[in-house]
Length: 242
Image (tube, rainbow, N blue to C red; front, side):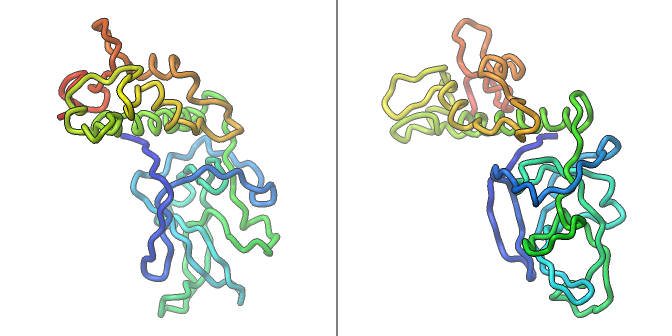
């Protein structure tokens, strides 16, 4: 299952702001709570969105980052959260939603509150411990590498590495490590431009050098041409994505 990362976009949905992606932000120390054990948790299912929503509890108003998971499943999962640039564990929380007619408190799945003036630690992000070789570490490594691969495959399949608008032609021609034509970019250049995020700071570099990444992904053809191997992107041949 691809673990692609989609970039930040926002839309209004039923009184909530949906968060569809991620940007790299280093959190303030005050935003992060104690490290928690996520060794028995699983990654959040793909396609489960995040929202910004206003909820009420004990007369106070809170702007929350809500995960659209059933409350009973809240403690089963962890996820990458862009505002903390970290893998976090959602928390089960009880409150009343601003735009619902039902005044009864409801359980929801929350990452953290955005009320900066509220000092309570229970509203801070619960960042996962990530020992090397553990489930969070392994997922993070796959996550970072898949994001980079997805970016390069987008260029390969769309032909957008090719200059002067020859995108359709580029879909079915070899993509080389360097390209001499004006406005065209080789796949090594694209790697350095598009794969700049190498994981949360606490993990170190999960992507490595271009050569490391290329070897893991079987990115370069073995026929002597050393062109980009488009079959790793689901294309019909190493050169043809038409």
